[in-house]
Length: 399
Image (cartoon, rainbow, N blue to C red):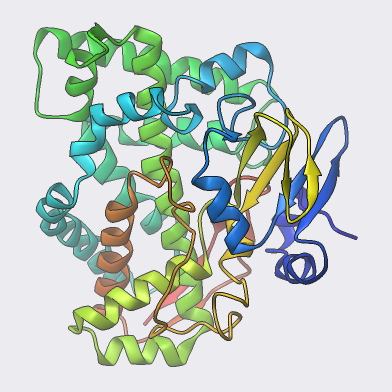
């Protein structure tokens, strides 16, 4: 039975289901209890095509989540970069794109490496069991994105808590009540409003100042628009990279030969750049994005009516046998490596792709530079979510 909803992901990544769908039913109709069903797109080619045709496959019509949203939630999600269609998306993206340009990421690299080294030193000094997700993987992206946005260091843990509660609404370890995600959103909006008021009076060289003083079509952003930008950057810049780092660590543990090769080539930039791409292919941080058809169409001859959902499964595309030879083998020297972890191209290609790459390469490299051995110290636990691909608990022992 094909089941790609949250309970499945809490147990495992359903690679066997995806392999079956790619082979026999690549445009699969999937029922959703209590909601409208969707077409699951599982082939690399189809996901790239849909990603690059926002006029046909809208995100704004129904959001990027599998389940339908209330009108109020849909309105708010439409104010986020990931929830907008072009040309509006393009105009808003320009406000922050400079902060994520290759030139700016290059400038940030030394800071990323310094922070990664400090975290690796901490892991090596402890010489004991570490809960990798919260103690290490969460720290680096949280520190970096908060500094870029303009969040004071003393408030980083507050952002961490709000982020967990907002994206973990399907997971009982993060959600204290069914309304808690909404409460967390209200708290982070109030925090953003206070910080934005400071930037109106005293601008700084940070993203929040750019949002407060920037204009789209000659008009300043509303308070709610700034709130939604702030939340998107905090969550996307923190939660997704945390999961990429945790996934990379688990992958290193499970593939000792690759770990030994990376340790032996610790100063080989080309080797580490290629390995980073394979970490990304092997363990993307987002399972999927939903799109909604704006008109009647077909995918591989399967009719899709206007208003129906298609869910683009990047996790499946990254194991597509027609694109990746020996796709179920972790290969740090794989080339080419046309994974879709940052999306299938088009206007919604991940703004923070370069930043995530720098953090994966920086942290994994510094950990292996200091620690000869690494092993699981307990059973990992996965996040219960049909959107976020996360290991939420990863006990590790460094040697």
